[in-house]
Length: 460
Image 1 (tube, rainbow, N blue to C red):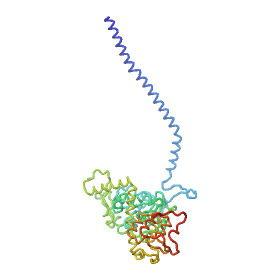
Image 2 (image 1 turned 180 degrees about the vertical axis):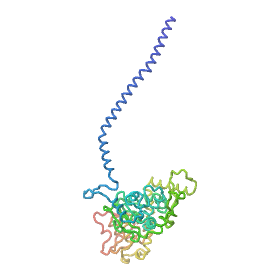
Image 3 (image 1 turned 90 degrees about the vertical axis):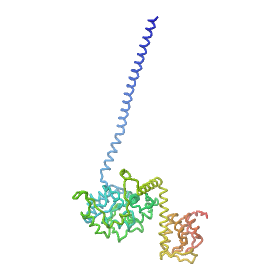
């Protein structure tokens, strides 16, 4: 019995060992076989997919190669009548500079075109793609986006000609809001309290410029004699060239400071790293000292060597916080900028009121007692109502209530214009200032008579 029991125990043990061996080997072999099959299937699917899209990839590569093989300053376009033309405006303008300007002429243009101007026109540019000095780029941006007068004050010390890209699309005016932000990053007086410079740009989808954009040197040069009433100051700039399709415009800077030009060209005014060295950076001419005094030293945010424990750095961090807040909520930032702009315009129009030509009534005029004439003030009120700029209208009339009662030469005033443009909001504003809608113009018409088509009921 003992032997039998022992024998049975051994056999059982052997079976257990055999079982373990089978459990260890059989699944492993099966897994290996399944894995190999899966890899083969995936490889087959990959190559099948590759061969399926290969013709499409090949075709797209050839299309891209053809498109990219053309010079970027020349391209084909289609006119409004369907005619295919070659737009050669950029090379044409650079070639004009080369043939029609002195060899030492300096060209002020946004840095994007610096290499092209230097390479094709062989002329010195104020900045190009290798200008790493952000403060210098900001000075250039300030000249372009500041008022025409201030822009000339800077450019006359730096350049002999100004080149701007026009023609719509991605031209200089389209880029200009970004230029204004760059300028404001160093020259905080550009857009006080508004790091994103929302006061500079278009006010609507129709391309209506904000007052700040409209007053800028860039807008004046870009839209010179192309838009009604826009003319560059002939005492500061001379229009000398337009490319065939209007993509490039060139202006000669008048009253260039020859003293500043000589200062910059004199090697003695360059700062070399070592005496006799080849690395020598230039200096701004003394004539720009007043502008440069307004600059705020700029440093990249990733500059970890910078100490951030001063009041100056606290101001900088507050500026950046405001910047990112505005970027996160652009609508709110735009509304704040428009409000500030409305107050600024109201102050300007108040000056117009005091001008002798406006002859604004000191008290609400009585019908038939008021002198009717066309003035800057009546034009301004008409524009505000026609453009539905109610915020500015309310601000202007809030400061000058008498302005609601002005009349133009034809006897019409704000209430006539409000009805003419069916501007219910303007009617509400004028009614609050006591303007009647029953008065008559010189032809005997009341404001209501100007409405054509269905009359929208105005609730008083």
